[in-house]
Image (cartoon, rainbow, N blue to C red):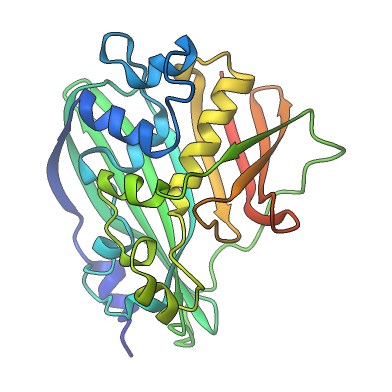
Amino acid sequence: MPIDAAKALAAEPRTGEISWNSKDVQLYHLGIGAGVPATDPDELRYTLESRLHVLPSFATVAGSGAPGVISGLSLPGIDVDLTRVLHGGQSLTVHRPLPANGTATVTHRVGGLYDKGTAAVLVLRTDVADPDGPLWTNDARIFLRGEGGWGGDRGPSARPEPPAGPPARTVERPVREDQALLYRLSGDWNPLHADPEFAEAAGFERPVLHGLCTYGITLKAVVDTLLGGDVTRVRSYDTRFAGVVYPGETLRIRLWPGEGAARIAVSAAGRDDAPVLTDTIVRHS
């Protein structure tokens, strides 16, 4: 069996150093659609170095420090076919506002490995800290098709109740045809998002947008729409990737604000509102 659960769970954490600068932040922001209109003061805080604010979801690519799909599959005990791998969900906890320039220590480990029968779910945990203390914690949930069935723990199954009533706000965000090509320059080189032949082999009609790109687009919409553009108010952000987005589509983002937290649902507007992100919660001050 390609997965050795005992070996993966017993593996020592990997620790290293990462660094990033304002250019990395600007590139990430452009990769999630910031900068339109280019001279809008609300957009310049994402694109102009003299007034740069760092969207917390930048943590998923900072210094290429968060283990993406490809790097996570190089961990001990994990040896699977990349065409059978999907990013299933993402959780981010922000301990302090992210600086535009930084150097930090990053620690990767397997946070969980669950047997879903026909598939396995691998949880990759990343903790990042600088000399002043913890900065953020990322959990990436990776869905490995065809890799279950070894009799392991099925893992948590509880899901939040769907938001009640109609959304308070609905916004739409167009995705550029070249959005995935631009976003991948921030460090996620999975060919699923660029190579038509690879995408077809993985069961898709054409390359798909990175789930974490949709994740960033959505958080920016929440910050801009509900939090007055204040990125420092975000405390945590959790989602489940429920479906794919194709470059060139439009995202429909429904928002249910609440006390200290916002519920969000994201769909593909041009495909009968096919779900894209579900079980999505942004907690904030």
